[in-house]
Image (cartoon, rainbow, N blue to C red; front, side, top):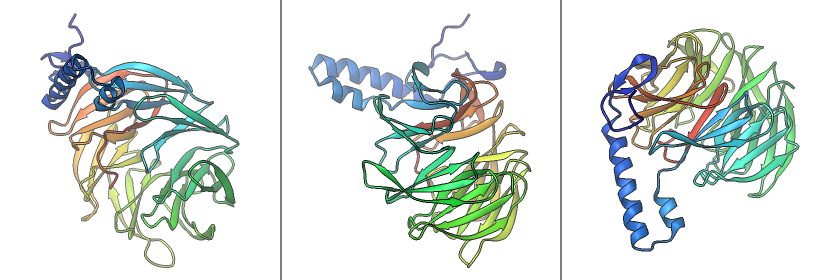
Length: 355
């Protein structure tokens, strides 16, 4: 049996794949170990040494009510953090000081330090938080109440949340996106097949349009002119022009069955979408609005994050209960790490730009 050595050739990966992890991970691993030895020898502060280590990878386990903490230097689960009941999404605040878990059945939020993986605090009385998002200016915090058919908008003063308005929407609000100006939030309605736009300053519903079947995640382009919607009940991503008085469908991009969750590559041009039924990940050029590449996405691909260098996909393989590491250069799965049941969100502090 091959020992778990990340830098050795012939490491057994998912589905019988045998190969070598990308050289950059081996280099980072060796460099971080060398830095640790020299730092301790020189008597450096342990806190400074910890800050220089790679940031952990967080994987939300929806059915377990936990978050798995993965060390990217060893690809081992080093900790499992209890959350509330039925957490569905994980989100890093724009200032990157906290990773927030939305505990839908506990009506609460768990704040976690993205560097130390310590729980910072729990905020209660947030009703049915399924999906969540801060405005870029961090003045507004928005949740989608998936079971209760409303979107809640909270004022945020840096310490506490105060409900500004509860807005009835369509049936089963799913995912959220907020523009770069912190002025508009878009939300998909999973069971009434709609996209709605809400004005943040006035907390009023601006418009709603019909979409294809079971719309899920939303992604807005950096110029705030276009919004992409993944159709989990279909096989494509819909593109909407949002510059007018209401959203206007301008294109449908075929990706794969179960188009679900987006993550930008950080190059200002491309975004990935996971196709949950097709078990693939499509790379979309959002300037040309077309698919330009495709990657494997084993066992119900869900949420993703991208390494800071933009070369590695960290994927929640929901049906397998694993974090999947995908090398984009070779389009191959290089490692899978067992986590909890039904992994949903993936976030890390060492990530590519969100646009």
